[in-house]
Length: 216
Image (cartoon, rainbow, N blue to C red; front, side):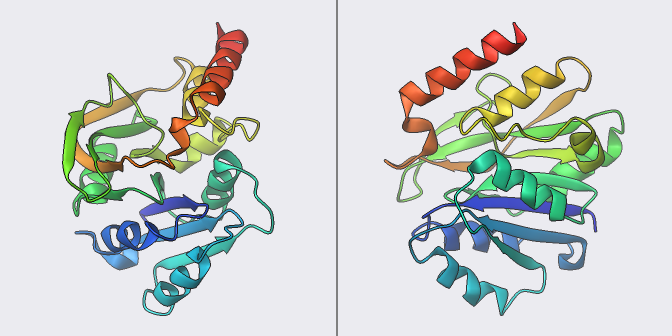
């Protein structure tokens, strides 16, 4: 298995189908990649929707958490269960370009010393209209970064104490030990809506402060 895509979902039934369609329709051999959705004890129809897709796609797996543990621990659980040489996270309310895993995996294969490679992204509105293109080197996000699984595991995975800023904490903890490149192609679509995890400004500030205290 070459690539494992990890999707964490909590009450995103209204978005999960668009996400899955983009992930299951990649320009990549379906036998060489898998999609693992970790449902974090959703209380909406997310699991019902996922069941429809499980019956149709052999490369889709679903892990259902019995209790809500947060994005970091849910991501860790998906990564531990994954079979791929490379792993990449996609949020359940986002979606990706058809060449997403082809381009990122090819870049990692050609650059063996890297821990991972990110891609640029486009913020889209709820109706999927493009709002603005962003460069991941300037404004990084938690998803759309493909990692070598062995090095990510060696680095300790995500800190489950961080319900926000888990990617930022990971990079601060690893410091300069590993390098992450950026592919300047906007392969990721970041959906803007009122329920985004990153809209809780006060909580974000608290976790950001905690990172500075730990690693400054």
